[in-house]
Length: 187
Image (cartoon, rainbow, N blue to C red):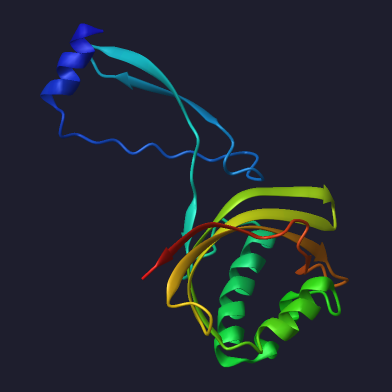
């Protein structure tokens, strides 16, 4: 092993990128166990490691590699910002179960005098209680301006219940748990 460390130390400016695919992408934050093996003509060795991934998505990021419910949530969150800033419910209407709890709540919410900007979001867990139901646990970070408070950044822990409609498309139905503010920073 000493030869391996000497070789690595001598070539310390070399960086290696390790890419892998997860066979079960439902829980993106599950602990990952890796084994990295180094081998050249003279020396070799293995290193075992574990880590817990953190997948932070930019609000404007590509949706490639996301599941269908995750893609829908990406589109819904971005449309929600447009709807609230322009006070236009039609931007988000198609992403929600008609007359469901979220539909009714958002219809009133977008009338408020609030300006928001979606900064980032993070899928913490995606589960499927049935083939037509999906629960998504997320953290969302917004820049918010309203009448009650000065401009501030807010990170919210949220849960969404999605239902598959008759066309096979996912829509937001309800919030299985109350949203909680994880962090709030005033500008």
